[in-house]
Length: 322
Image 1 (cartoon, rainbow, N blue to C red):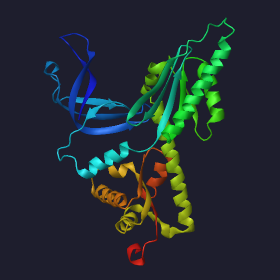
Image 2 (cartoon, rainbow, N blue to C red):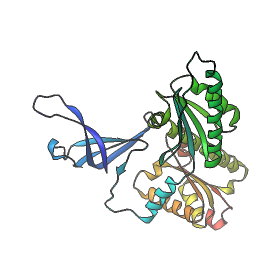
Image 3 (cartoon, rainbow, N blue to C red):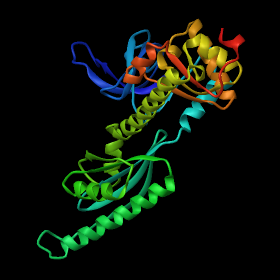
Image 4 (tube, rainbow, N blue to C red):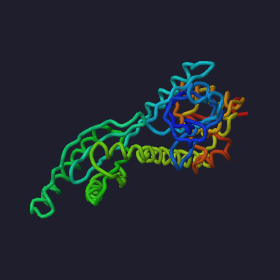
């Protein structure tokens, strides 16, 4: 993989090292996701880089966050199945509206996994503190922003949350107004050093929109798992547990929805091959697939169930279930 990164290097004998920006290509050996930084850390051996610093063959770690660009190479190439899975993942629904405001300017944007789409941006130019028109114009500005957020929410259709950010108490006033109008859509407060488009980018760089999206996804996964476990006690024929049962159900196109632990797809072994085959069949029959993080509460429960559980459209015939 190739990415822009920082590397500690020494310019001369006896000099202190300093961090230098550069583009490196590493042969990936290990990777791990760090929830507290919302970044994926990838470690490997440098195979391409600037000749000046003699880095070839040394170890290096590249941290990748939301919005970062990387190039990924595979010796065996990319199959149509891999490409389709990436495309489907990128097209998953879900967006977050972000409003960044201070007493000088406001900007509204829509965040998706692909990045931030800038919307309205304008100056507020509110009167000074001693001006009697200040409170009136402030309330009018808040109402106008609320109106624009509601219109954008209706236009997007898949908004799972609204983030209101800024440096002072103005964001709290706006958040209160939005919360009283938006039912079923959470309004989240976030600190930012300024309003406007710069404030939007600051919020995105901190990872809050991605966190809101992820929370919504995990809440959906929890609800699906609870439904499956309840159905397991009421009508066990409509639930398949473990790789073997789910494999049989996938062959006849019975799987409607599946929850799959991410660890089953992270290690190249026979189980991964079987799970990928199951997912391919689920996809071909129009079923839904949810990849569950092993570090989440749902992931811990799913691990005890063999790492995969499926909701079936119809019970399996006796010859398939034995």
